[in-house]
Amino acid sequence: MRALIIICVLCFCLGPVPAKAEDNAVLTVTECVKTALGHHPDLRAAEGYVEIARTKVAQSLSQWYPQITSMSTLYHQTAQTGQGVFSPSSLTPSTIGTDIPALNPSSLAIYDYYNGGITANQLLYDFGKTSSNVLSAKENLNASEYDLLTKRLEIVFNVRQAFYQAVAAKKTLEAKAEAVGQQQEHLDQARAFFKEGTKSKIDVTKAEVDLAKARLDLIKAESSWKTSLATLYNKMGIKNEVRHDPEDPLSVEKIEIDLNEAFGEAENQRPELKKFISSIKSYRAKGKAAKVQNLPALSGIANYNWNGSQLPLPYNYYYGVQLNFTLFDGHNASALAMEAEGNIHVLEAQRASKLQDIRLEVEQAVLSLRDAEERVAVTEKSLAQAVENYDLAKGRYEVGLGTGIEFNDARVSLTGAKTDSISALTDYQIAKAKLEKALGLFRDQ
Image (spheres, helix red, strand yellow):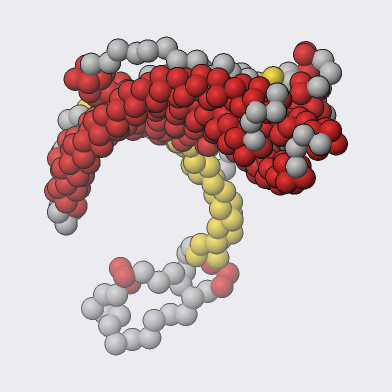
């Protein structure tokens, strides 16, 4: 009878359940993480930044390749020729003070003029300016990839945390539903005893009140379950179109951790720290490029062009080397070098601060894991005692020795012990996920 009541209550609360197992009615933490890594928009955005950084590398590398330009123009030109054309050579001592002859409109010549050419320029040497810019772009690409890994770590942890919270909410709902079934069974017994005259009306009334409280707890648990499931789908980066149940045994596997080794692992693995190193290298390359910015750049140059007013056009070409350098840039290069040095100092300080935060994060995660392990052991004992106490109280009431108050206290204690056990097991799994994130371990489950 009790089992049937529990099943009915769960079916009412959880709604329709897919009939086929192949419909993915059950979600595992591995499936949730894989879904998030394949669909989460924040991850797609981080991947987009990586692609942008990759194009910056290509742009900086383009300076090593030949630069080829072409030019082609057609002019419809008007020019004065012959008598009446004014030029500075017409100003002779004999003409000064006399009237300058008027221009003769008949001396205008109108014709088409063609001009075209191709120029190729190849950088030969620039004292490391281009190579420094390439190195800076590559280190920026590395930094973007570390940002992507950081976002991946964050998403994996958020999904795992939301998953285990959803599992806890589901198991808590089941415990509350079982409590309603237990209380309903107790109410039926109280009514039967009242009809027989062995129990007073107050036992029935007390059982009805306790059943109403149990149902209220069940409604709250159902709301928490729905909220946790919506949160899980949000952390996965998808719409909550079909409600599936997360499934996990919430087991505990004791982990031995050396705190100093954990600190070293985190320092070597965390992508945020690696990003700082890449960013510092990028600014060092920028500073080097700024220091040689005004040094000469040697290039090879070749040109082929043609121009004239009548086809076929006469042509000419030339080739050789070209040396370009800036004589004075208003101290722009030195300012850029100083800016790079300033950014390096900022990044070094930020990395030191982040390292301190990570060490704290690792230590807190280790302490939380150990605390959860101890709580799991304590709650398992408490649960066993609560089960035994409930069975005794239930048995005493069934034979007429116990009271409704005694039974309800035992039932409430049992439900509380179950929820405490669920909470401890959930906290253990979340602490384990938090520790792996703090260590920079990329797990998909």
